[in-house]
Amino acid sequence: MYYTHLEDYVQQFYTRMGITSPPLLNLEEIAFRMGLKVFYWEEKSQALFIDGRYYIFLNKNQSPQQQWQDFCHELSHVLLHTGDQFHMYPLFREYQEFKANNFMYHACIPTFMLEALSIDDHTPQTIMKVMQIFNVEYDFAFRRLTQYNNKQIMQRLHNLTFLNMR
Image 1 (cartoon, rainbow, N blue to C red):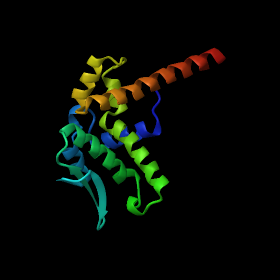
Image 2 (cartoon, rainbow, N blue to C red):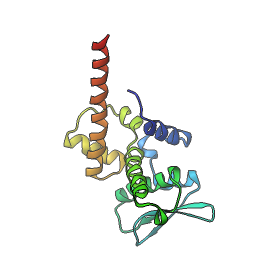
Image 3 (cartoon, one colour):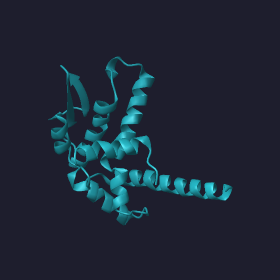
Image 4 (tube, helix red, strand yellow):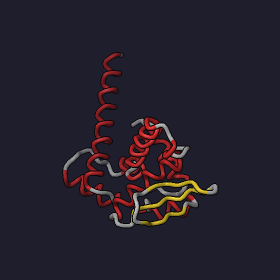
C-alpha cells in the first residue's frame, strides 16, 4: 500500500520519537518528548505560541478520548501551521482547521499502526476494537476506519485498472 504525504509524515514523526505501537500513543509522553507544555483549563482546546514556545491547552471537562483527539488537532497547528488565527483571513483559517482535522485522524490512529492490526472490515466489533486500542471515541474510530477502508478500495481499483491497461 502506498502512503500519502500525511501518512508518511505521521509515521516518520512517531518513529523518530520511538512511538511505534498504539500503547505508546499518549499525549503526555508525546508532549514530553517534544518539549511541549500541556495545560488543562475550562475553555476550548487550543495551541498557543508565546515567547518562542508552544503550549497546548486542553479542556479539562472532556473525556480522555476527547482530550487525546483535541491534542492531536492542536499538535497539527504546532507542527504545520504559522500565524495567529485571530488575525488571519477567514478562508485561510478554515483551510488550517480542515488540515488540522485531517491530521488529527491520522495522528490518533496512524495508518502504519492500523496496517499492523490487519483490519479489513467496518463491523461494530472492529470499530469497538479500534476505539479501545487507540483510545478514541466510537464515531471517531468509525470515521477513521471509513477513511482507511476507502483508501484501500481506491488503491485496489487503481491497481486493477493499471493491470488491465497493460
